[in-house]
Length: 196
Image 1 (tube, rainbow, N blue to C red):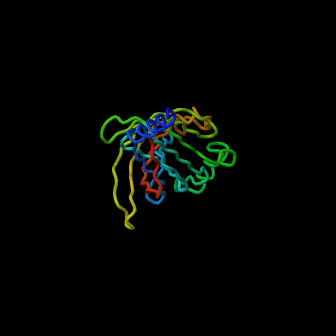
Image 2 (tube, rainbow, N blue to C red; image 1 turned 90 degrees about the vertical axis):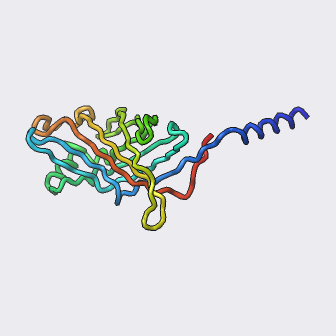
Image 3 (cartoon, rainbow, N blue to C red; image 1 turned 180 degrees about the vertical axis):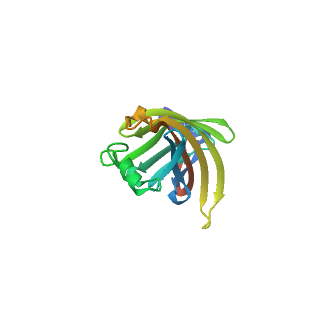
Protein backbone atom coordinates (compact mmCIF):
# COMPACT_ATOMS: atom_id res chain seq x y z
CA UNK A 1 0.00 0.00 0.00
CA UNK A 2 2.78 2.37 0.93
CA UNK A 3 4.57 1.56 -2.35
CA UNK A 4 1.45 2.40 -4.37
CA UNK A 5 1.07 5.68 -2.50
CA UNK A 6 4.66 6.66 -3.29
CA UNK A 7 4.19 5.85 -6.98
CA UNK A 8 1.01 7.93 -7.05
CA UNK A 9 2.79 10.81 -5.34
CA UNK A 10 5.63 10.61 -7.89
CA UNK A 11 3.16 10.64 -10.79
CA UNK A 12 1.39 13.73 -9.40
CA UNK A 13 4.76 15.46 -8.93
CA UNK A 14 5.69 14.79 -12.56
CA UNK A 15 2.37 16.17 -13.76
CA UNK A 16 2.73 19.32 -11.67
CA UNK A 17 6.36 19.96 -12.63
CA UNK A 18 6.43 22.56 -15.43
CA UNK A 19 7.96 21.33 -18.67
CA UNK A 20 9.09 23.54 -21.51
CA UNK A 21 9.46 22.93 -25.23
CA UNK A 22 12.83 23.49 -26.85
CA UNK A 23 12.83 24.01 -30.61
CA UNK A 24 15.58 22.41 -32.69
CA UNK A 25 16.84 24.41 -35.68
CA UNK A 26 19.26 23.36 -38.41
CA UNK A 27 21.30 26.25 -39.78
CA UNK A 28 20.51 26.91 -43.44
CA UNK A 29 23.84 27.78 -45.13
CA UNK A 30 22.06 29.33 -48.13
CA UNK A 31 20.60 32.06 -45.91
CA UNK A 32 23.43 32.25 -43.37
CA UNK A 33 26.99 33.61 -43.40
CA UNK A 34 30.29 33.00 -41.65
CA UNK A 35 32.56 35.93 -42.51
CA UNK A 36 35.88 37.35 -41.32
CA UNK A 37 37.89 40.54 -41.77
CA UNK A 38 41.61 41.12 -41.26
CA UNK A 39 43.94 44.07 -41.91
CA UNK A 40 46.50 43.93 -44.71
CA UNK A 41 49.62 46.12 -44.28
CA UNK A 42 47.59 48.15 -41.81
CA UNK A 43 45.99 50.17 -44.62
CA UNK A 44 43.27 47.92 -46.06
CA UNK A 45 40.88 45.21 -44.98
CA UNK A 46 40.57 41.79 -46.58
CA UNK A 47 37.16 40.15 -46.21
CA UNK A 48 36.51 36.44 -46.58
CA UNK A 49 33.84 33.88 -45.85
CA UNK A 50 33.28 30.13 -45.71
CA UNK A 51 30.91 28.43 -48.12
CA UNK A 52 30.59 25.06 -46.36
CA UNK A 53 29.28 24.96 -42.82
CA UNK A 54 26.49 23.44 -40.76
CA UNK A 55 25.10 23.75 -37.29
CA UNK A 56 22.31 23.05 -34.84
CA UNK A 57 20.62 25.44 -32.44
CA UNK A 58 18.45 24.20 -29.60
CA UNK A 59 16.41 27.18 -28.44
CA UNK A 60 14.28 27.18 -25.32
CA UNK A 61 12.54 30.57 -24.96
CA UNK A 62 11.14 29.70 -21.52
CA UNK A 63 14.43 28.37 -20.18
CA UNK A 64 17.25 30.15 -22.07
CA UNK A 65 19.98 28.54 -20.00
CA UNK A 66 18.94 25.19 -21.52
CA UNK A 67 19.59 26.48 -25.05
CA UNK A 68 22.69 25.53 -27.01
CA UNK A 69 24.44 26.01 -30.33
CA UNK A 70 27.02 24.06 -32.30
CA UNK A 71 28.61 25.16 -35.58
CA UNK A 72 31.06 23.24 -37.79
CA UNK A 73 32.90 25.08 -40.58
CA UNK A 74 34.99 23.38 -43.27
CA UNK A 75 38.36 25.12 -43.56
CA UNK A 76 38.74 24.09 -47.20
CA UNK A 77 35.74 26.25 -48.11
CA UNK A 78 37.47 29.57 -47.34
CA UNK A 79 36.80 32.14 -50.07
CA UNK A 80 38.33 35.62 -50.26
CA UNK A 81 37.70 36.19 -53.95
CA UNK A 82 41.28 35.29 -54.90
CA UNK A 83 42.09 31.66 -55.76
CA UNK A 84 45.81 32.20 -55.14
CA UNK A 85 45.23 33.74 -51.73
CA UNK A 86 42.70 31.05 -50.80
CA UNK A 87 45.25 28.33 -51.61
CA UNK A 88 47.74 30.10 -49.35
CA UNK A 89 45.17 30.38 -46.54
CA UNK A 90 44.47 26.64 -46.74
CA UNK A 91 48.19 25.84 -46.50
CA UNK A 92 50.29 25.14 -43.40
CA UNK A 93 51.04 28.87 -43.14
CA UNK A 94 47.48 29.65 -42.02
CA UNK A 95 44.52 27.25 -41.57
CA UNK A 96 46.51 24.09 -42.43
CA UNK A 97 43.23 22.65 -43.70
CA UNK A 98 44.63 19.19 -44.40
CA UNK A 99 45.65 18.72 -40.77
CA UNK A 100 42.82 20.75 -39.21
CA UNK A 101 39.84 20.38 -41.56
CA UNK A 102 37.23 22.04 -39.37
CA UNK A 103 36.64 25.13 -37.27
CA UNK A 104 34.04 24.60 -34.57
CA UNK A 105 32.09 26.45 -31.93
CA UNK A 106 30.18 24.65 -29.21
CA UNK A 107 28.35 26.55 -26.51
CA UNK A 108 28.79 25.78 -22.83
CA UNK A 109 26.41 28.38 -21.34
CA UNK A 110 23.60 30.65 -22.52
CA UNK A 111 22.20 33.59 -20.56
CA UNK A 112 19.43 35.99 -21.56
CA UNK A 113 20.45 39.60 -20.94
CA UNK A 114 17.44 41.44 -22.41
CA UNK A 115 14.39 40.56 -24.55
CA UNK A 116 16.44 40.16 -27.74
CA UNK A 117 20.01 39.59 -26.54
CA UNK A 118 21.80 36.54 -25.19
CA UNK A 119 25.29 36.08 -23.80
CA UNK A 120 26.70 32.85 -25.16
CA UNK A 121 29.88 31.28 -23.81
CA UNK A 122 31.49 28.40 -25.63
CA UNK A 123 34.60 26.70 -26.96
CA UNK A 124 36.04 27.92 -30.25
CA UNK A 125 38.39 25.45 -31.95
CA UNK A 126 40.64 26.85 -34.67
CA UNK A 127 43.85 25.43 -36.10
CA UNK A 128 43.64 22.59 -33.57
CA UNK A 129 43.52 24.94 -30.57
CA UNK A 130 40.44 25.26 -28.35
CA UNK A 131 39.79 28.40 -26.30
CA UNK A 132 36.72 29.74 -24.49
CA UNK A 133 35.01 32.79 -25.97
CA UNK A 134 31.98 34.83 -24.94
CA UNK A 135 29.75 36.54 -27.47
CA UNK A 136 26.68 38.76 -27.44
CA UNK A 137 24.03 37.20 -29.67
CA UNK A 138 21.15 39.25 -31.12
CA UNK A 139 17.90 37.33 -31.57
CA UNK A 140 16.16 38.54 -34.75
CA UNK A 141 13.00 36.52 -34.19
CA UNK A 142 10.89 33.95 -36.00
CA UNK A 143 9.34 33.99 -39.48
CA UNK A 144 7.66 31.67 -41.96
CA UNK A 145 9.67 30.65 -45.02
CA UNK A 146 8.45 30.34 -48.60
CA UNK A 147 7.45 26.70 -48.06
CA UNK A 148 5.70 27.37 -44.77
CA UNK A 149 8.65 26.25 -42.65
CA UNK A 150 9.37 28.00 -39.36
CA UNK A 151 12.65 29.87 -39.28
CA UNK A 152 14.53 31.62 -36.50
CA UNK A 153 17.41 34.01 -37.06
CA UNK A 154 20.14 35.87 -35.24
CA UNK A 155 23.60 37.34 -35.56
CA UNK A 156 26.77 38.07 -33.62
CA UNK A 157 30.29 39.45 -33.98
CA UNK A 158 33.48 38.65 -32.13
CA UNK A 159 37.17 39.46 -32.29
CA UNK A 160 39.99 37.00 -31.78
CA UNK A 161 43.77 37.04 -32.10
CA UNK A 162 44.88 34.39 -34.56
CA UNK A 163 48.18 34.10 -32.70
CA UNK A 164 46.22 32.71 -29.72
CA UNK A 165 45.38 29.76 -31.96
CA UNK A 166 48.90 29.18 -33.26
CA UNK A 167 48.42 31.03 -36.56
CA UNK A 168 51.55 33.15 -36.35
CA UNK A 169 52.63 33.42 -39.98
CA UNK A 170 53.18 36.97 -41.29
CA UNK A 171 51.84 38.75 -38.22
CA UNK A 172 52.51 42.40 -38.97
CA UNK A 173 51.88 42.55 -42.71
CA UNK A 174 48.73 40.51 -42.03
CA UNK A 175 46.86 41.60 -38.91
CA UNK A 176 46.75 39.50 -35.78
CA UNK A 177 43.22 40.60 -34.88
CA UNK A 178 40.44 38.90 -36.84
CA UNK A 179 36.85 40.10 -36.78
CA UNK A 180 34.33 37.30 -37.23
CA UNK A 181 30.67 37.82 -38.12
CA UNK A 182 28.01 35.12 -37.90
CA UNK A 183 24.46 35.50 -39.18
CA UNK A 184 22.14 32.53 -39.39
CA UNK A 185 18.69 31.46 -40.43
CA UNK A 186 17.72 28.19 -38.80
CA UNK A 187 14.95 25.89 -40.05
CA UNK A 188 12.88 24.26 -37.34
CA UNK A 189 13.07 20.48 -37.38
CA UNK A 190 10.10 18.16 -36.88
CA UNK A 191 11.07 16.94 -33.44
CA UNK A 192 11.03 19.00 -30.26
CA UNK A 193 12.73 18.19 -27.01
CA UNK A 194 10.78 18.41 -23.78
CA UNK A 195 12.85 19.65 -20.90
CA UNK A 196 11.94 19.76 -17.21
